[in-house]
Length: 222
Image (cartoon, rainbow, N blue to C red; front, side, top):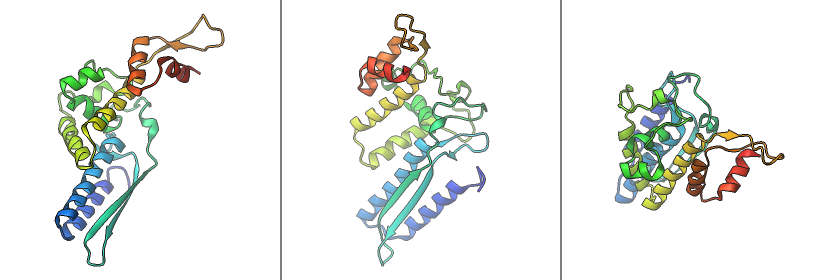
């Protein structure tokens, strides 16, 4: 189907109906909640706003619901594929396009303490279109603050601990800051094409990633 034709929403409604028709003892209710929560996570990390669709799938998803002979839910399996990775670092040619939802949700929904730790207070990132940051929550049909809250709840339902969630957000922040690195010619080393100009950004990005700053610079410039 064409973008915006309702494929994702149709799949969501079918899954919800199948879950509603199955019995719901306590154990099965937990599995149902995890299935719904997994969709929230996949959409945050694998969907993006385009000029045609506020929630366009940028990843393929295979969902298998597992029932016993009585029609009671036993479990589920989800596989993702064809993630549009280039969207992360590709400058949007259309001002209505955005990067993956998760980046905007993080910027809009993170607490002041989280933003300070992740150095997100400035909010200016090369990988994100400034016109689509939705700071005033005015984009029709999009509420990044509410969706960030839903994401946190979904991660908790899936069993992620607070420390693990914090590490995920730290990795996301590192990706955004990597996009702000600038380079200049290294005149002191004839064999080196360039070095990072804003070394302060390089240092804390390396810290976020748990790697040596020099090793990161060498990887980015060779």
